[in-house]
Image 1 (cartoon, rainbow, N blue to C red):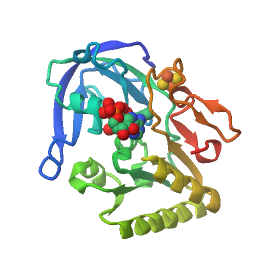
Image 2: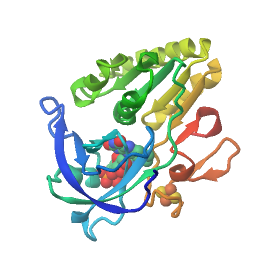
Image 3: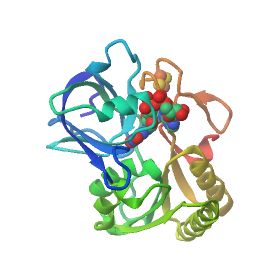
Image 4: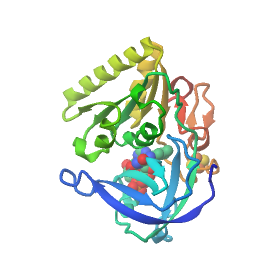
Length: 261
Ligand SMILES: Cc1cc2nc3c(=O)[nH]c(=O)nc-3n(C[C@H](O)[C@H](O)[C@H](O)COP(=O)(O)OP(=O)(O)OC[C@H]3O[C@@H](n4cnc5c(N)ncnc54)[C@H](O)[C@@H]3O)c2cc1C
Ligand code: FES
């Protein structure tokens, strides 16, 4: 069942990730949602803590990192006012939540599938890996700027083939771009599936190589959103024909050759 109504849920836990290396910058939030069964990896939720009152009107979008009988888990990086205030939530606090929203990543159980994550873009791939019927067909590549401990990498590396590269200096970026090209070429050659999530420059690189090498690739866009349901037009992006489409309802996932980044 797909549930899109707004409902109040309770914060079960807020736990920092990579605390030793980067105190308080990344955290997981677990929310009570025992009957959440209709979501698909790649979909997102809009979240607005009750404590924001009239200070901050707009909810914030987050990928569903995983969801099971114990609740819904989001993986969040603190980048501004909203995510900073969310980090201070405590068990028992109330949050307004709507979702699951948007479309989902393609799943082709028997196809070799490459998951390309740029930083926080790893969040939806946790659920993708957990729900995939044949995880032995998956490989994850993470390009990251902060220490690996800051990301839920360990949760995935014991389930699928995982590789990562740290961007600690400008020269590392060349290595990351070369690694992306090499892997996209490998998966294009075997008619694999490529799924990417991360910041816009990362997605542009994936899109460019996918076009050049003839790879089948999907990209997940992280445009700013206000309503999450197609009503405000705050999230629009041009599709391949130049028509502006709502990322929240037509996306956030697009075939790489069907959207302009
Ligand atoms: C579909 C979708 C899924 C997402 N999933 C996750 C997730 O799983 N984990 C996570 O940590 N974040 C995710 N994001 C990004 C997250 O929504 C933003 O980081 C958050 O809304 C910022 O809120 P803020 O109030 O802290 O920042 P603000 O104070 O509003 O802005 C602070 C800074 O962050 C930038 N920013 C704000 N929103 C975005 C955005 N959407 N994308 C990129 N930069 C932004 C602003 O330009 C500004 O520089 C997702 C976004 C979308 C659209
Ligand atoms: S966020 Fe309002 S239309 Fe997409």
